[in-house]
Length: 156
Image (cartoon, rainbow, N blue to C red; front, side):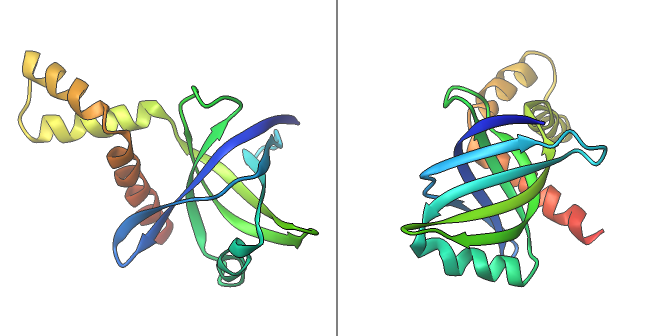
């Protein structure tokens, strides 16, 4: 097993057909590559008590989550993961949330998604390269689109 520091955790939640971001107020966190055949990771996020009801509801309803996690350093690219809340533990002044997740995509997948849309829109040559460079800058928008695709795959 390999353990890394969890720097940030952002949930990409599907609400009425639209992906909404929820930044989790992370106080401490770890992410562990369990190095199992199924490729699962364990995320432990220590967060304020105020978040308990939110995570308990997700756990009790067994809702799947799409998340952007930032590992080790704020300069790193976020990784997209999908998982489920397995446990919440009340600590003296905080709560610990345990999430079992799998990597769903990386920056190559976002690049592929952008290129597919540009080609479909008729871009080619220099205009394709220029528009790709421009669109790549809006990482939040592409993360939401990728999250939509991941949520759609849950239903299939």
